[in-house]
Amino acid sequence: MSEHDLWQGVLYVHLLAMAFFVGGQLVFGIAVVPVLRGDPDRERMRAIGRRFGYGSLIALGLLIVTGWALASHYDRFGSSTLQWKLALVGLVVTLTLLHLRWPKMHALQAAILLASLVIVWLGLELAG
Image (cartoon, rainbow, N blue to C red):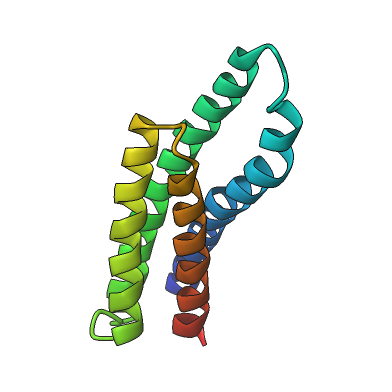
């Protein structure tokens, strides 16, 4: 395996984790919550939310580790775009922890999604 292949693999894991984290938020907010909101069995929605929450935490951890590795390898820590992205990552981590504590505060989920979409945009700027 070449060094190029290794870094392509790190980028692949980073993008896969991003797809799970952001894509899952979109699916959960657009499809799962509206369909199950009126369901009298609230435990089903809670179980889905918990499972997605744990998966999101794993994805977030992978994003941080692989993102740090990529930024280090490509010497991007001096980039103002990366600095904004890192600040938003800190915000998303904080909001995610708050959302785990207060899951009924839907504004937190909306803020996480919005910040996550901006992070994806900034990531595209860095890659370009």
